Length: 135
Image (cartoon, rainbow, N blue to C red; front, side):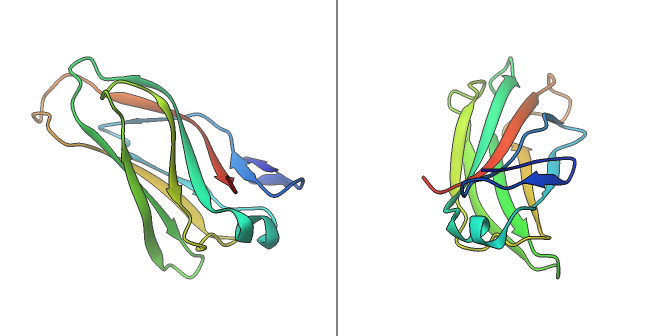
């Protein structure tokens, strides 16, 4: 596993992960995480796994998450989407990496609240970690 926190990597057995908790809400609905680690580890990573550690969504508004990769040259590719079900249930979610992960790029996770009125009750989700895995 290649673990990364604040941009520092340590090489090991073919996975790559970033483990810093981030909180997404209506004011900050996306995060960008640098992709570090060996090219070999990234080539064999078939999935991006997003660990949703907690979700505060008392009215259970529908939430959708988009995972994308942006290369260091600026090319952006949507890798996939997932939703919480029920809408306040945390868990681990995977999207295919499509072989697009490259060192120096970024993975972006964006949250959309789909069915809430503009001034509805607050919604927040904590992303505990992002892993690039072979599974």
